[in-house]
Image (cartoon, rainbow, N blue to C red; front, side, top):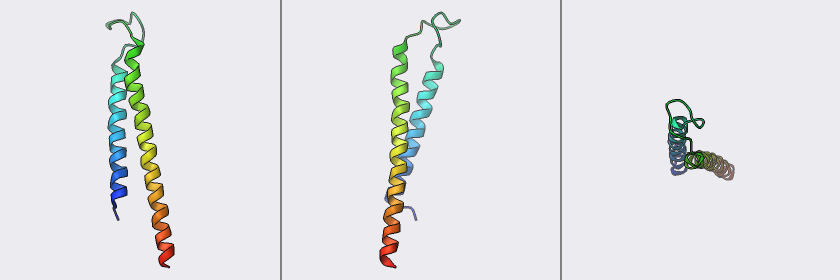
Amino acid sequence: MITNTTSNAANLITNAQYKASTAAQEIAKLPVAKNEVGSIEFNSSNLIKPVLSLKEAEFETSAAAKLLETEKVVQSSLFDAMA
């Protein structure tokens, strides 16, 4: 049975996956070192935004997992109360 909580958790996970994928692509496109062949000068401040996006994605995934765990506990309690 898909409930509102389950769909919210699924949406959180989907958004987190997209955010992580986008951030990973952005990080992969950055030059690795100063004077790398074929790249512009490396600026470490370019890493801040994508790294923070990865951390946000981690938090969103964790929140979604906690939502699902809480829903499981609530459903279990309801079934116990009905028995």
